Amino acid sequence: MRKRKPKPPVEKRPVSISTASVLVGVETHTIRYWEREFSEFLNPVRTEGGQRRYRPEDIDVLKEIKRLLKEELYTIAGAKRKLSERFEQQVSEPSSAGNNGTHGTKRSKRTATQR
Image 1 (cartoon, one colour):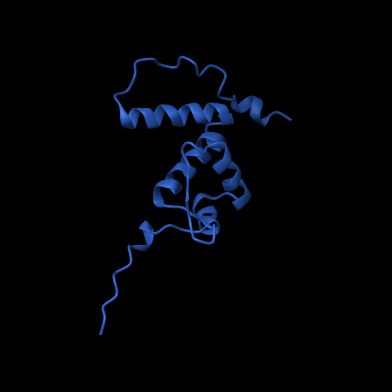
Image 2 (tube, rainbow, N blue to C red):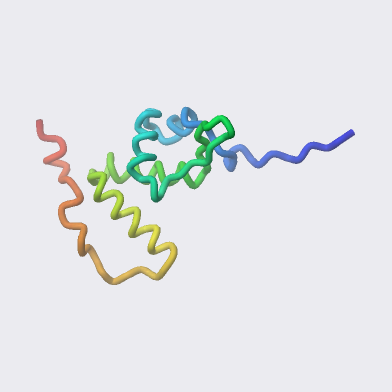
């Protein structure tokens, strides 16, 4: 009898866009939009049939995008800059540039909630 190769643990397997939407807490169309807007940070693998499969690191990026946009109230441009800074810090040493170039990228809660 032939032994099967063990599958990776569930938490390490790529998931469908519908599962990713449940994990992140946003609709599937939002994930597709973010995939286009944040393509330099988010690139899910595709099946032979073209379906998206999100790896754990993709889910982490989606959660970070959601946090920046929904909780921290960054604009799309501001969130891109913030993600760029974080990815650069992971690759190289943190810069001492401070907040240069980020002025005006974060919306105030008062402005965002005014009707």
